[in-house]
Image (cartoon, rainbow, N blue to C red; front, side):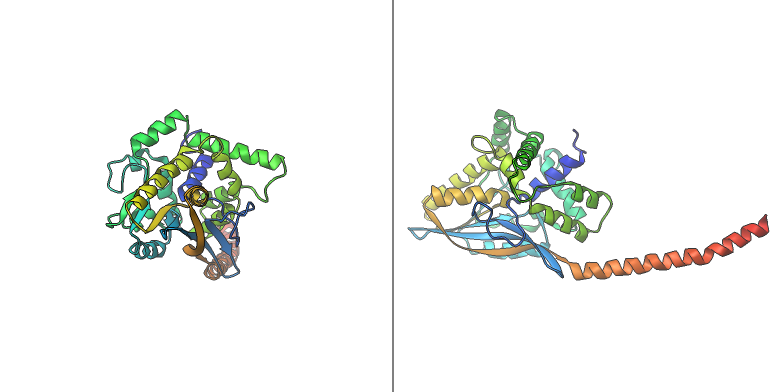
Length: 324
């Protein structure tokens, strides 16, 4: 399998969005746990939303888990930038040591490569461009490159292995008759490679996210979960504990939505916090009414072209007869 493999590309795309446990118009997963992102669709529109989940401990310290998608409408990042101003500290993810660290982001990071690729394909904004990481209250809460590489090597983990674990687990669940739906990349591949419009691809991608639970669960199997998610969560929560010990009372953890189920579990079961509320932020929106109008216009144009072809055909035939 090469980097150009369509399946690898789509899997990297899904990880790049970092959205797990998605469900159409559902607030909880089958296990009852809060979903941290969702895709909803109506007759006139469809949208991807991420959650802001609020927590408080007995001492009155407040923490909000803010689920991020790394590719979204520019307005989504504008809303987040304004929101971040109110926190004592915003703990953020970024393997490499910080927003301005000298990390091999573009050339050696496969996830980042596909994030940028699909950002352009879907006509969306990239998180690194939309978020102001220079804000004074931003605190890096992730592994540096040396830590990340060492842990990946120790666990013999890479994207190919994660992909295999995820799909093997899905097939086991399918064989056992468990789960309501399963991730199927064929529709996404067809939409992408036949050159559908950005909005058409967003609809296909969003519908598939409703079936990501099983895949992500498979990827996290094993002691401590994956380095990509489970072990980076441990680093983030250690930084959170340090910030709380410094006396900060109003904090946010801004991490990819796939990380948040594990963080929610640790906050509520190990760190003495209780969930106090949730709200949803719109990451992208698809105007289905506009799509329908555009399709009608295309159909009318095709019909016009067909008429012109049929109209010109007898003339061409007659001219060929005269020439003969």
